[in-house]
Amino acid sequence: MNLHTCLLCLGSNLDGATRLSAARKALLSYFPGIRFSQEMVTEAIGTGFLSPFHNQVARLTTPLPAEEVRAILKGIEQTQGRLPEDKANGIVKLDIDLLVYDEVVLKPKDLEREFVIRGMEELAYNPPYEGGRGM
Image (cartoon, rainbow, N blue to C red; front, top):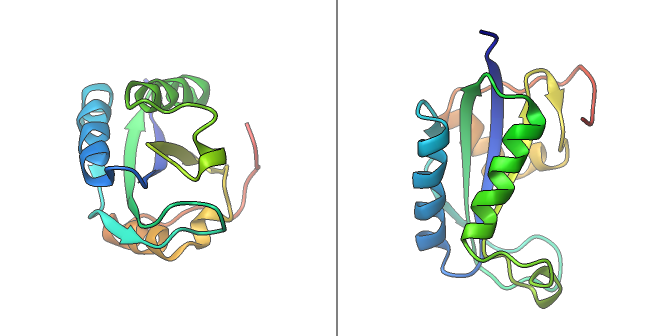
């Protein structure tokens, strides 16, 4: 069985601590060996978003392809009430992004964010900077 390494970023600006706790439980049910950095509270990046955000980084290994991992993440977001129109109102109930899948950096700008850098350091994760983009 071929295992793939994934780096995730979790965020919420509406009842963040509760939503990240629920997200961690859900992620553990799908990926039992997942490891999480400490939760961090940050100001919103960009304009129009409510602050503060609760953020966290996670690292996991899975036999699943990237598309299935993304589908699981989107399902967890939906169980926390995420709606497409929320972002336009500055609300992020729960966002779980797949930042890196094996050697493919999917969201390079996110890897530059301070809370992601701190989370990667905590998890002893060194992201690949070479390799393809997009999936």
